[in-house]
Length: 163
Image (cartoon, rainbow, N blue to C red; front, side, top):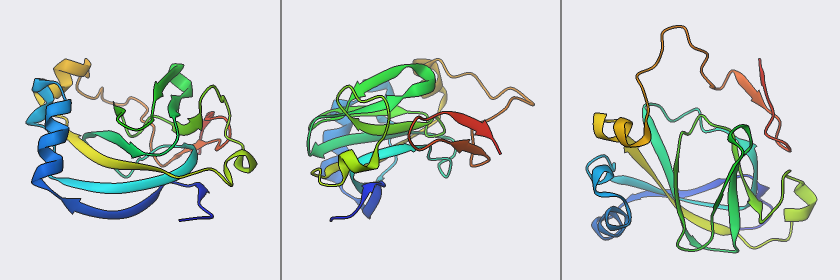
């Protein structure tokens, strides 16, 4: 795939007992029962800041299978986590994030145009009571603002504004 810098592209959904067992073995015991059976291949040559507001009532996970060493960057939280082959990250899909080169603070399209693709297996964890406890997630507060598709995200910086 070429010409896709900045975008996370789906390469198809699948179910596999082998991948499910491998992924379950990589997760803490408390999360294994929450792992949904459907997975999706994703690839990107860097990804601009975005959220995945189309997922609901789950935590999203990305397990890097191949590609250059990258980081998943969460600017509002000041968190960066490795996203190279073998790395796995689980996060709130509503939280703005990007896939950037090591140390990059902003997404600049030109820097990623000729980069190799990173390939991920995307997975979901049900927001069950054990998952909520492990991640310290309380029940939603009535009337609280939610980051959703109504929130505009600056693709270069991850800054948010309400639409």
